[in-house]
Length: 277
Ligand code: BTN
Image (cartoon, rainbow, N blue to C red; front, top):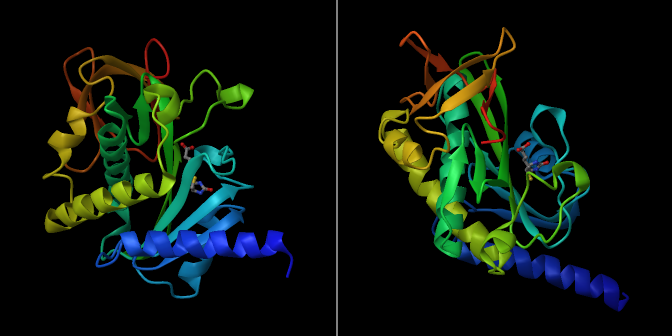
């Protein structure tokens, strides 16, 4: 075996073992699968789910060659600069509640990022994590379910950690923890802290099956709270004041006539009236 292959194998095994040891005794990361290069961790997590992989299985890639974003977009995932990971969940929940799990991951990433950088970190509803007005993380949740039963949910999380530059089309909107804080972080530390925070939020969520115990904390990080937002609803865009999420994770928007409407994450996107946030 040539040295290049030996080195690749060694680094693969080392990553898996290191992450597994950090999650010892936890269901998040109870099984860790690491690939130096992978199309998409979401695609691989879905494949493993189909083979019966357990709740808490974590798929991590060094780079993704076909990283998937929301609304059919691609997600830039170059080698060694960010966290590209997907956790597989098998929750005993109605499918309509699955979108709330995405909000929990946003809270976990924001909490970890703020702790590790000492920079204020906000969430742009429903689940972009922003620092210094720029996006440092995106989350793509996918689900396999019957009308009243979830087989599995996969939550794919991309965190720009040590990224120094971004492709032209996202250069003005995206940033990284390093660019925002000047701190170069170990990817395994970011994965560990995010995973452990997610586990705690998930357990709190399961106590009530909704966000009633977490909405205040989420709203404490919500970008644009109390400000005018533009809701891009396929049935017609409208503006109103963001009043934060309710216990279902819907964004409550106050309309000019004082009435309130609840916006469901699956259907729409929300912008600040003056730009991205
Ligand atoms: C977004 O568009 O904001 C969501 C981006 C989600 C990217 C992550 S990276 C890990 C996981 N694997 C993927 O292919 N996508 C998600």
